[in-house]
Amino acid sequence: MSGAEPAGPGTPGLRAIGGFLLQESLRNSVRVLILISLGVNRQLSFSELLELTSTSKGSLSHHLELLAEAGYLESRMVFTLGGPRVRVEITPKGLEVYEDLTRALGRLHVARDPPASGSGPAAGLSQG
Figure (cartoon, helix red, strand yellow):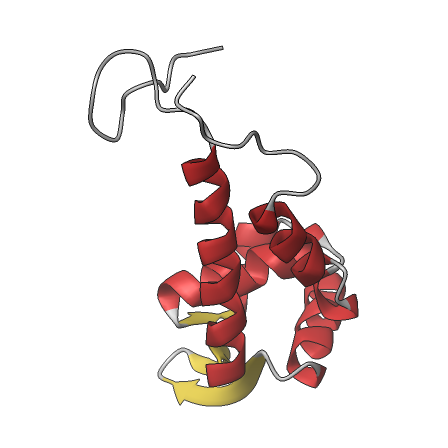
């Protein structure tokens, strides 16, 4: 053991993640996926989000509406040669929540003991 505190109920990272997931706007895995996808890409089309989430158009529209009401994203219509398209972009508030969430997830990783052998990012991936 390296002396790292186990990732138990009192771990600060878990409390932070719980705080995010208790927000009404993030109580659904599809909305968390949308927020993470936009955090990584900054903006995506409605079609790209539809493919990523594997939801129906109506369901995706509902999730986007809830995230927009929370101030995490904005949708706008853009006109292309192929016709009008909806672009969804993360807001500064949404980006802050995304960054806070990824930091909290990173703290969970740090709280774990390092792999017994190997080095680098792939070390320990095959451990069961």
